[in-house]
Length: 486
Image (tube, rainbow, N blue to C red; front, side, top):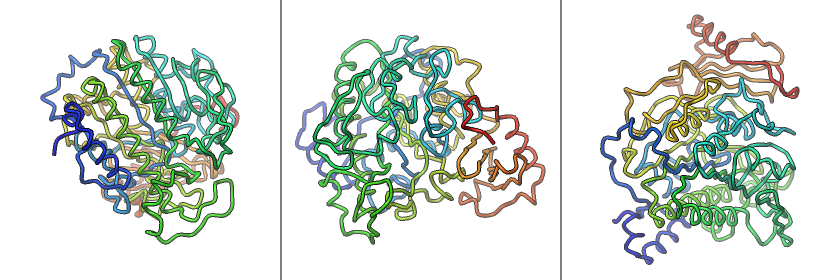
């Protein structure tokens, strides 16, 4: 079977149409993407090479919600092929266990012990020089920058100019995260101006947000991909976050395939088929990824573009769906709002044909706050001392012997009475009820041998517990926003 790069370049539209139908049905038997095995990449030459950079961010997608990780109830052929032709980061962690702080970590390069936006709520990034984003830093390095989808520079805000002021030359999408619960929005925003959809009513309507966000991203690639200026496109899509909502042509494939408990109450859209709709939303997400990568190949810029795909936290239990229905977070414990790995370890792939060795995996321990240093290294910009992240560019290239390691990773979360967690080599420490006791007991797990975090080893390894407690104390800085406190 020819790679998609070959299909595109020979204009075989019949094959592309066949794949489009296969992707719609969740079939994984057709080769999706292009890319050959990379030959011995040269780290020195790549630093400052200024490739295009795309970061596609799913919303609430679990570690096991992709078929290359073992999902059997539905298939993700584009993501599977992306992993086959790129590198899968098996130990990559989100910035947090909910949207707002996770995206703050991704955009600033700091973990949740230091970022301003440490939780969800009425909060937004402050004016520069505070909360400087990777977009601003890449602008200064000569990049054109865009964010299309669900804005990460505020949680619930009506500040339509904020994305542009925080470094994005182009913005289209949702300003507020609550607004992004709806897939038939009455209004979206483009560079500070409202774009209205008068026939949409939030939960119902004629214009599906996933379609217009994808169309906007494809237009952006058409425009920017034909220039000599490098670009950074951040594409934070809504799927598969609740509402559970997807066009019928995607959902009908899964209707009747699962035991269903209809959803009839709460803040999210009613549905008779929560498990089926969730599966269809992941397939729609995969369709979006396929279209983006096809466009890069069509434009002939795939070999000069690093594409990273990830999710902002683990799989959710909202709007009638529970992450156990499709084992979304297997083999890990918990899900969204947990600091067990089910809430924060996320499926992450990097794809760069001709540069990243194809079909590789890495167990390098990394997190969202490592993305800005990685992008800056590629842009030829020194990484600011105040960033917590470490560039994982050597890991992407398979140069493990040149990869700097974290001593530990740290998270804190302010809902559900407060939580802290540390990943320290093979060890994972979790502290609950932090608002009641800042020095409370720490659960200790060997996350390598016990990924389900089922056997608490705290009593057997008190010296490791003490070390993790010290890391928690070291990493936590007093929040500047009064809504976050232990």
